Every structure is written in structure tokens, then in C-alpha cells.
Image (cartoon, rainbow, N blue to C red):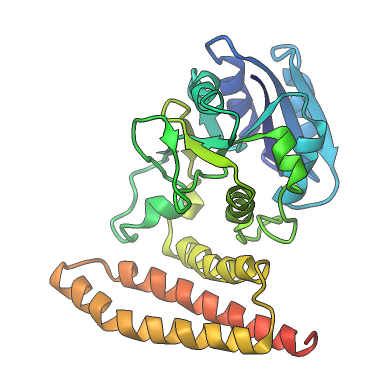
Length: 310
């Protein structure tokens, strides 16, 4: 296999060199190129990439004017020359054997369409005690074990460390552009939607334990305010993801709202009791509550929209 490492970036020229240097120092024998997709940045990203071409001879730069991570990823799929496109976030560092670690997954059989590996957190300070125990998950942390294996449907690699077979991804239409990060928005779901379609088409997703990355967590994210925003948008993202699967009529949206409300009511007492008996931090209860509220808001918005389309 030969690879295209795609780094999609938006106004992070200060972080980008660290990510690219981690690719430049890859060890192993896989053949690869490096592709930077500048997603409508207004900083000096272009100049920074140009300055790095002397140390990264396989580096190419492409400007994508349509803002949105999915637009950038789809542009990478069109521009890539490799059989596999390995997406690496602009605030992530790949371990030296990252690409070699992906190779065993993709060469396992011809049905492997996607692979991902561990995501470790690069924290500026220890996670504050006031944050919920689930905070590392919202920051992107993931470890599914030490074995190269096929993943089940509900086991999902992180988008900051996701590699896809280019021809397969193109045939499935790439990533939905109404989902995913757009500027400062915390909307997500484009990875889950893409992987849903991968599974539906009969392809496989594999785990590559040796293909690890370190994901930098900005200090501003180590706050309840950011986590509350992230949980709220996660709830809304779930609704947007479901609407892409057919939840578009008013009746369906209202039914989903009632179902969510009943589920929340059933879980509220048990969750509160657990929080008290285990002396759990109050944020452990607040985060899923806010995510449920974001989901309910998204359902209500979808129901209102459906009244004008059905």
C-alpha cells in the first residue's frame, strides 16, 4: 500500500509544523506523500507550509475555499495520490511508526476500508478535578486494545486518526458536508455517518494498535464551559446524523423527543443516586444532561423544519 497523509487545517499555523514534522520523521518502509489542505485559513498557513517544503520534499499544499472539515477531507480524497488517505489533525502528532502500524490492518484482506489507532492526550496541565470523569472521551482519547482486529459496528476510530481506502471513500461520496466542524462550531457526526455507510456497503473497519497519535488539548478546553458546549453540540449532532438516515417527518421527530424524555426520566434517578453514593463529581451528571438537552433541542428544530417540508 502507498499512503497520502492528509492534514486538514484552519488557522492553526502555529501548531501545524509540529504535526508535519511528526510525519517527516516516520520510520518504516511504507511509501507516502504529505498533503496539507488549507481550509480557508486567514492566517499565514500558506507561508508556513511553503517554508517547510525544504525539509518535507513530499509535501503538497492545496487551498480549499469552502469552510468546513468535511469539505477539506473531500478535497483531500480528490487530490490524494495514495491508495490510502490517512487523516491526521493539525493539533496531533503521529508516533514514529504510525504509518507502518496502519499497514497490517489494510493488508489483512481486500474488504478493509478503514483503520484507526489509539489517540493519547497531550495535556498542557493535568485534567482539573472539577471536570467530569468522561472529559478525556470528549477530548478524543481512545484505546481499543493491543490487537490488530476487525472492529464491531459500535466501535469507532477517532477522526483525528482515521485512514480510509481512497477509491472506496470516493465511491461512497466522501463525508457529508452539513456535518463536522465548520469554523468554531463544535458540530460533529461526519465520521459516524461515513462509517455507517462503510458498514452498510459491506466493507470492514479495523483497529491498528501500533498506529498511535498524541492529540494536543488546548488549555481553553480544560473548562466546564467548553465541555458543556461540546456536550450540547454532541446532542445536536446525533439528531443531524439521524436525519440523514430518514428521521425527517414531524411525527417521527416528536416521537423521538418523547422517547428521549422518557429515557432521561428513567435514568435521572439512578444517575443521581449513583453520583451521591459514589461521591461522583456533579459534572458527571451535568454533562449527559446537557447532551440530552442538546438532543431535545435538535429534535424540536427538526420537527419545526419538517412542518415546512412534509
